[in-house]
Image (tube, rainbow, N blue to C red; front, side, top):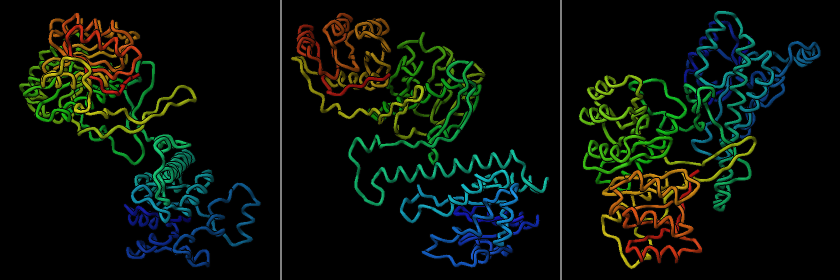
Length: 513
């Protein structure tokens, strides 16, 4: 049995090679791999000893040779292939161990691997006869099977081949993304091309399997972009049932919203309570306990079975408050005190308790239906409050500006059509996902109740008619922020002036579907 070793990542290489050597496998190695084996005293042949041809062109050509690829690609079940090997004195290669240059770490022309992918693909194509190892994580399994059986089973070679093609596909995708970004030309693409290149190559690797999909009859899982470490990879679950698809979806929305609120108002503590990816309540407070109670009081009925996001540590005081309130399916926080975990577990063992790092910025949004995908960049709030335009005779107070800002932030993260009412640092009424903006306003005021008196409201898109605004003012709202841009803007502004309220225009819409 002969193995060809040519790896960039040399983690565990020497130990793996020594294991193969003990099993009587003849080793052939190239370049730096050969040097590492030489230094460790592992017997091997250099590739040029096999090919009779020296490495050349700064290492660009070393394994690209018929004496290498013939040994990998020969179909051992075909007599004419075996005859060709014999005629040209080519020895078969039964195991290829190869991982590729880390292109994404320092992209450049010189880190575009040619020989490596060629060997990997050749071995994977001929996996009926050849094993291909592309990750140090596979070393132990391969050695164990070789020790037990003297050869790799077909199912193992099949699985290794599948991993190998995924490895080269991900590698090529990294190169394409680099070229899309200007590559070695150094020219920035235009704004559209930067977000929407001619082709999109997403390499996703499965991170976990969820209990089920959106519904129990569906299969669901979490994938991550290859080579990335999303915040979910840093989550530690302290208690509770396994996470479901919707737990992940809702917790991500809640965790991002609470960090955005904290970023907007760094002097406060922030808590968000999420249900079906929309806030039932979100609040700023002098303490996390204060913020939680305010967020809960905004809509305690909808909070049942929701996600509580806490931008800080859950202590016993806060845990006691949460445990006394409606059942939470997930609580995600920066950290938990051990005593706080005991309090929450004592209330309900199934509640998932997650400590998590800060979320990374959102990247591309990709939504699929059938064989079609919609792609866009992340929806960011680009226009700062200082650049909003007051279009009414009344001007906002400092408290109104804070409440408008909170309402606008929560509204942008609420399913459209959306109206959000905020008062004294708390989102007290959320109208989400309605076909009519008037109905969304009615839901928001209904949930806010008396808290709508003197409150501020946000609309994620312009008011097409004055009736939506009138629904808010009749409930006592005294300040409204909206994008503007309707042909009836003046009619709506006139209605705001007639009601004596403040109206701010952002010039920026935030639909969310």
